[in-house]
Amino acid sequence: MPISNDQELTKAVAQASVLVQDIQNYCSRKLRDDSKINFPRGVIGTADSYREKCPGYLTADQISSCAYGFMFIDVLWWLLSRTDLVSVGRQMGIKSAIITIGMLLEAALWVPDLPKDNVLSKKSGAGVKPRLKVAKERGWISVDQYTALDGLWDHRNNVHIKFLENSERDLYKVEHVNAPLDALHALLASLKDWHTAGRPA
Image (cartoon, rainbow, N blue to C red; front, side, top):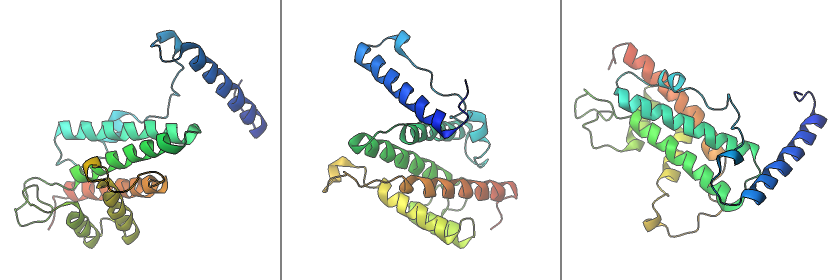
């Protein structure tokens, strides 16, 4: 029966939690096809829907890789939003989302066929932050969206363990994902419009 109110939701969550734990207790770390529960349908967007969000100057392979990145973020969203995962596991899930968003941001801001002296050019040696600044100056993202993506890139640069000086425990928060992800969608829409319009200077 479908859940129709909060009381039924509470009961269903309790029942599902007990059953999932029972399955895990029985199977432990054994790989068994008959132990797999269904991942909820409709959580993960389609690859085609995410390909549509990408600007056309990216190659077909880049667009597909970006789409798969968005699909992975959907998986992480479900894990972080529909389970009580805490502590190190939660931190690493959020960190994985930050890394993936950073990868998508970096890909979108490297534009082919622009002069080398253009900050956005694929040939330019500029990093992500100067490119983000240009995006803000061109009005492709708001000041708040710029701040969210700029902060995301700072967190993205913390992932190199060989440079890590302080514990990552409690470093990452869900808001370090949500606002930058919304800002990335806005940036991609602007870049797609800009490309469609012939990439005016």
